[in-house]
Amino acid sequence: MKIKYSELIDQTLYFPTEEFNVEENNLKFHNIPLMELVEKFGTPLKFNYIPKISLNIQKTKTWFKEAFERNEYTKSYRYCYCTKSSHFKFVLDEALKNDISIETSSAYDMDIVKSLYEEGKFDKNMEVICNGFKTDDYLNKIADAINQGFENIIPILDNYRELEKLTESIDTTFDIGIRIASEEEPKFEFYTSRLGIGYKDIIPYYSQKIADHPSARLKMLHFFINTGIKDTAYYWNELYKCLRVYARLKKVAPEVDSLNIGGGLPIKTSLNFDYDYQYMINEIVFQIKKFCEEEGVEEPNIYTEFGSFTVGESGGHLYKIIAQKRQNDREKWNMIDSSFMTTLPDTWAISRHFIMLPLNRWEDTYERVFLGGLTCDSDDYYNSEQHINAIYLPTYNDTKPLYIGFFHTGAYQETISGYGGVHHCLMPQPKHILIDTDEEGNFTYTVFREEQKPEEVLKLLGY
Image 1 (cartoon, rainbow, N blue to C red):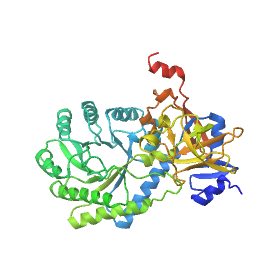
Image 2 (cartoon, rainbow, N blue to C red):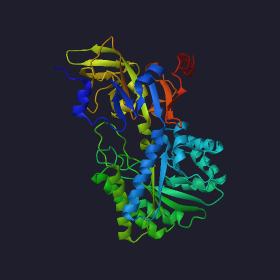
Image 3 (tube, rainbow, N blue to C red):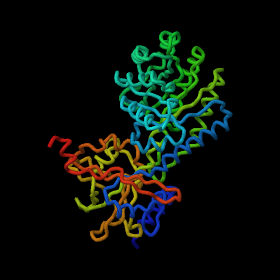
Image 4 (cartoon, rainbow, N blue to C red):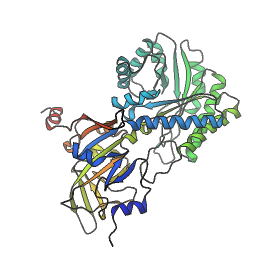
């Protein structure tokens, strides 16, 4: 007896979920009829479901609110959107509806801040956390904004030089933060993060350069580790190190009132994803409060910089299986009508997994396959997913087209691959649409960018 694809999913995965369900043999994402998108716009197709951005921001605010109430935490929580996750204007426009701050990482980010201000998206009270190693251009734009009255711009010092350059350029008092150079996991090729100032150097630096500074006021201590927020001994150990620095610093610098714990809240990368957001956030708040009480210092305002969690789950890519190649007795290659390297670069650069599901033919039998992209590069493939390191899809049939989708792809992929630029083997940028809802709750579709044309690519190359 042959088993249907739908039966395989029922046996092996948690399905349906709050994001996915199947109706009349076709997949829906947040009730969006994906096959209708394919019929209307074709493939390959990139989309962003805009309401998901606000939904995740509000979820996070609720988790922190409940954790604060449960732990009788008296200070405030501030949600910052990490712009480097996705710089698109439609992302910032939606995120800013939710009373948030933003975090920048480069000089051009400050031009985005200026553009949004001139458009009236926020006023000069907007809080902007400026992170990253700062070039002179970046520092000058930060200084210009502060001089123009943006009083809530907070440059986070990545090295000693930055305060000197800011002092030369800023005409008024200003707030600053310090980023802690956290220690990396043992498996890393280096011991300490290249970003920030070492744990042991922060107190001496404050005493020598900041305590008596005529215009700079230390407001924030910034902490972030690359592995993200996980319930591991490594994460809690690094958080405790950070809290020890905060407690020591607070005793000599009472003006420090905020702790920024960075980003790293994970997004769903499989249908069997299991992460207790409420537990982790409650535990972080509990540990911060407990540590501060033991040290006899005032607990800090808590800031987070969630980027991927804000925008990642809003994105998706849809492809058509255009052919199947049988390379030997065991390996079947389903070829998509695009490239993984150019549209989902994290799949080959860091072996990132995304949720992958067929859009149609759920009642057909299934087979084990590999997925290949169209470039001539041997790395342009996707060969592992949540199904025990294998991909199962409805059986290939020349007369019955099969479509697949990769979901929760909304963070980093476009900026890493070079949105609208020249791609490997001159693969064109797919059509990009935005999905929203109107006042009646109906879906609305807007073409944000058409598929890249040959003449656009040739012009970039000088032809």
